[in-house]
Length: 68
Image (cartoon, rainbow, N blue to C red):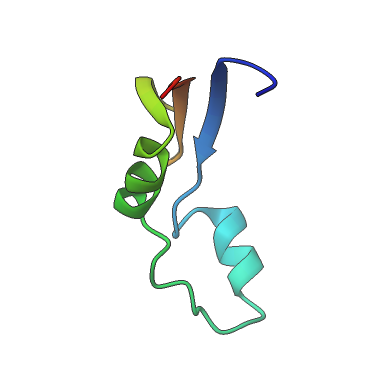
Protein backbone atom coordinates (compact mmCIF):
# COMPACT_ATOMS: atom_id res chain seq x y z
CA UNK A 1 0.00 0.00 0.00
CA UNK A 2 3.00 2.29 -0.37
CA UNK A 3 2.00 3.39 -3.84
CA UNK A 4 -0.30 2.76 -6.75
CA UNK A 5 2.38 1.88 -9.31
CA UNK A 6 5.16 -0.71 -9.34
CA UNK A 7 8.05 -1.22 -11.73
CA UNK A 8 9.11 -4.85 -11.89
CA UNK A 9 12.08 -6.20 -13.82
CA UNK A 10 11.67 -9.70 -15.26
CA UNK A 11 15.02 -11.47 -15.51
CA UNK A 12 14.56 -14.78 -17.35
CA UNK A 13 16.65 -17.92 -17.21
CA UNK A 14 19.44 -17.58 -19.72
CA UNK A 15 20.29 -14.09 -18.44
CA UNK A 16 23.98 -13.98 -17.42
CA UNK A 17 23.15 -13.06 -13.80
CA UNK A 18 20.58 -15.85 -13.44
CA UNK A 19 23.02 -18.31 -14.98
CA UNK A 20 25.66 -17.18 -12.47
CA UNK A 21 23.28 -17.64 -9.54
CA UNK A 22 22.31 -21.11 -10.74
CA UNK A 23 25.87 -22.18 -11.62
CA UNK A 24 26.60 -23.49 -8.13
CA UNK A 25 23.29 -25.21 -7.45
CA UNK A 26 20.71 -27.48 -8.96
CA UNK A 27 18.02 -25.66 -10.94
CA UNK A 28 14.83 -26.60 -9.07
CA UNK A 29 12.88 -23.59 -10.34
CA UNK A 30 10.70 -25.20 -13.00
CA UNK A 31 7.94 -22.67 -12.34
CA UNK A 32 10.23 -19.70 -13.00
CA UNK A 33 8.64 -18.55 -16.24
CA UNK A 34 7.26 -15.33 -17.62
CA UNK A 35 3.82 -16.92 -17.88
CA UNK A 36 3.79 -17.83 -14.18
CA UNK A 37 4.93 -14.30 -13.33
CA UNK A 38 2.15 -12.70 -15.39
CA UNK A 39 -0.43 -14.98 -13.76
CA UNK A 40 0.81 -14.00 -10.30
CA UNK A 41 0.82 -10.30 -11.20
CA UNK A 42 -2.74 -10.52 -12.49
CA UNK A 43 -4.09 -11.29 -9.02
CA UNK A 44 -3.29 -7.80 -7.74
CA UNK A 45 -2.16 -5.57 -10.62
CA UNK A 46 -3.01 -4.45 -14.12
CA UNK A 47 -0.09 -4.46 -16.54
CA UNK A 48 0.08 -0.91 -17.91
CA UNK A 49 3.14 -1.34 -20.11
CA UNK A 50 5.94 -3.82 -20.83
CA UNK A 51 9.24 -2.54 -22.17
CA UNK A 52 12.18 -4.63 -23.35
CA UNK A 53 15.52 -3.71 -21.80
CA UNK A 54 17.83 -3.05 -24.78
CA UNK A 55 20.53 -5.63 -25.52
CA UNK A 56 19.13 -8.11 -22.94
CA UNK A 57 16.29 -10.59 -22.61
CA UNK A 58 14.95 -8.65 -19.60
CA UNK A 59 11.68 -6.73 -19.51
CA UNK A 60 10.35 -3.92 -17.34
CA UNK A 61 6.72 -4.11 -16.29
CA UNK A 62 4.82 -1.00 -15.24
CA UNK A 63 2.04 -2.22 -12.98
CA UNK A 64 -0.93 -0.47 -11.44
CA UNK A 65 -2.44 -1.81 -8.23
CA UNK A 66 -6.06 -2.84 -8.36
CA UNK A 67 -8.37 -1.50 -5.68
CA UNK A 68 -10.57 -4.60 -5.54
